[in-house]
Length: 310
Image (cartoon, rainbow, N blue to C red; front, side, top):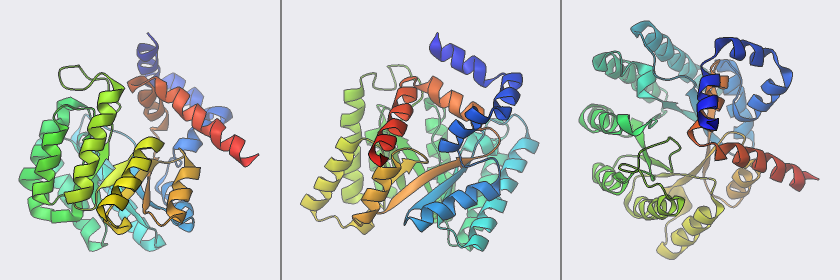
């Protein structure tokens, strides 16, 4: 019921308009979303860069319903790449294929992605294809393996999710391609037939996949806030002689900022996923609906950091 309520709230434009006018809600959102404009996204990246952190900018929004919407999203990403370059900021992009029109016209989606990747290559940057629900996993990976990676090489990478049962096999395929992978746990509600229902199994699969990517992968992104897994990665790197420049840690904007800085000060590369755009309210509600425990997790991290500052 809680999840259903959150999803319903995410789709109510009147509530969205009210929330956008509410100062408290906007302050809470500002903790996890870098404003509504390209300018605010780039400014957040510059602040992270000043602390020695790099970023991945993500324009909020997905599952567009028309070619016009997909083209607008593409143009915003092209503008973002130009602004990153002009500002001298250290950031790549994260893009969802449904935002580029995958559900409208696959050919349109591919052309939009090509345009973004070409611009990124011209700016010596990089584009990460975000992973969505399991319904899109095979389509995403097929487009990546068949078209985008052969054409663009390692100017484009992909995300794999350890809660999916198929992911160990996908990791091996990406290693064979020498493709750049961001490994996360995954937060969508999925059937047991395709995803591990038990957190212990998700974590164990994450560690197995992480170790393979650290040993054989092409600069993998270890995307987690789980301190036990991070400590395991550090110990594994020491034991196997894996140097810090061969991988990076990735975390969400506004979550465990203390840990982000601490890892960077120890000499590890840290990239922060920075969402921006007008769709911050639906983004937050959907994230909470995907896994309601995220609410306690986010609030707990805010309180933990507040206590450490006092």
